Amino acid sequence: AQSVTQLGSHVSVSEGALVLLRCNYSSSVPPYLFWYVQYPNQGLQLLLKYTTGATLVKGINGFEAEFKKSETSFHLTKPSAHMSDAAEYFCAVSDRQRGNKLVFGAGTILRVKS
Amino acid sequence: GAGVSQTPSNKVTEKGKYVELRCDPISGHTALYWYRQSLGQGPEFLIYFQGTGAADDSGLPNDRFFAVRPEGSVSTLKIQRTERGDSAVYLCASSLNTGVGNNEQFFGPGTRLTVL
Image (tube, rainbow over all chains, first blue to last red; front, side):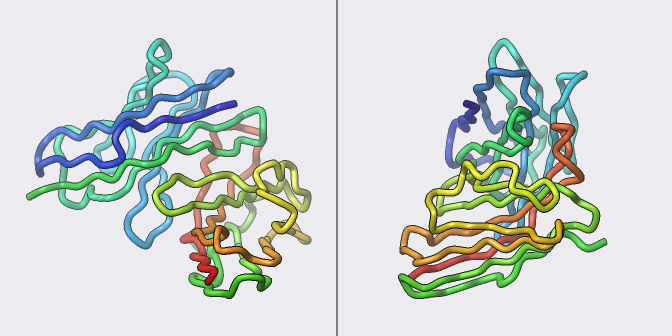
């Protein structure tokens, strides 16, 4: 069975500081990995995804993530936080053997301080 | 274009009542997923459809939960004899197909179900 662990249910950074949200996964097959963002009272929006090829993937709003197989990690980063980045972020792995359903982590709430 | 829509946006019901939650996927998307998001948790898979058939319903918590997609487009999640523990946000997502694992799932805004 696949699983996702997000370290830190809450992360607080200052505006302009580096954002680092941690995600570790468990999968018996090569994973497809995703980061979604959820703004208050809105649906989940895809930030970026890793399928195959380049392990550093770039997404929307300046976010990027690096797939590290040896560490079973897919951490999300952004060089400089903006107030508008405040939201909840979810890491997910796709179960390709079972219809590509997504298995999500518990989420990390990002707070950006001015 | 239109995204995934879900109705109602909020539903308050009493314990023991029956509820139906509706999902309208993006036109042309053959795969449709239902997830449930409880407070403070990530979404959890319930069921997915490929076309009209439920290809995997392993996430349905018990036989009080049922979902249909009779014409391969709109889907309805049905919950019988609701319990307070069913209170959550129910999310629907659709994608082009499940044949390729990296197909993006597009999520609706969810239905917030509260069982009193």
